[in-house]
Image (cartoon, rainbow, N blue to C red; front, side, top):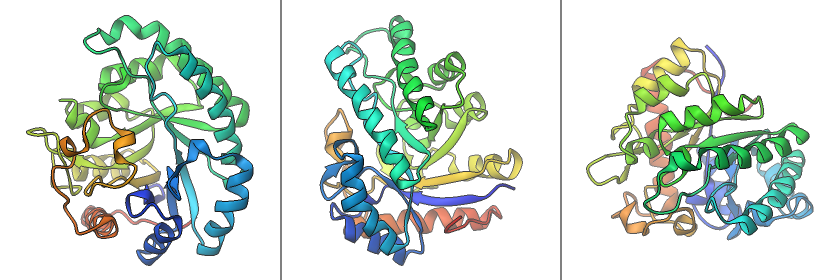
Amino acid sequence: MGKIFISGFADEISPDFDEQLRVVTELGMKYISLRTADKKGIADYTAEEVSEKLLPRLEKAGVKVSSLGSPIGKIQIDDEEAFETQLGQLEELCRICRVLDCRYIRMFSFYMPEGSDPDSYRETVIEKLKKFDAIAASHGVVLIHENEKDIYGDTGARCRIILDTLGSPHFKAAFDFANFVQCGEDPEVCWELLHDHVAYIHIKDAVSSNRENVVCGTGEGKIRFLLDRAVNRENYEGFLTLEPHLVIFDALQSLETESTENIIRENKAKDGAEGYAMQYRALTKILDEIGVSYKTEA
């Protein structure tokens, strides 16, 4: 059995970075996935700013960064100006990885024009992803592609096309159970397609009836079954990263193409900290039940 570490998108707790770190450490966690800090997206920071403003606070709290939760690839496939901008952002994100001793950058595979056939954009998607991959390779960073609604890689089959075609050690999969449910996909079928490429797992669950996010293990993501398979039978090791989406938080609307109330119709907790704790406890309960030990730090 490989080593399992719990991480999480702590900006769902609070926009204040110090509050994020306080709640995470009180839960006993020693890693976060850094998406926003102090109301500013990580892709909008420079490596120098991260070194000066964020790293000292991380070190003081004894918290490390498991991945950067970037918006790379979350642009329209035909927006060339945005693509050129993101090439530059990715270079800087790779430098930020070096500052934070972080290996992974979360990214996506482009929004498709509404009503279009995603498969007709396959070659363009692959061409642009190869440019992202080349930047990551030059810095020794691993891009983790998240399956997501409305992008080319929304289905398991198209994620597999991307990963097989690139065939790069610097381009792997981040597996998100809830996103597959919300796209009408069976997470078990998707895991079967992708497990050889998965380097990172997001802990988020959902129901298909209204596509709403729920506490992990209570939806249709088959999280308990698939974690048992991944860790106990297939020797997955690495991060399980909390992304609860149980309360409406400041940065949520910037992450979605649809209105936040269609994703979280009502808060499942009184605030972000409570929602985060609910997800953490639900995950650790599942891990205990399937006999998986988890570590707080390397």
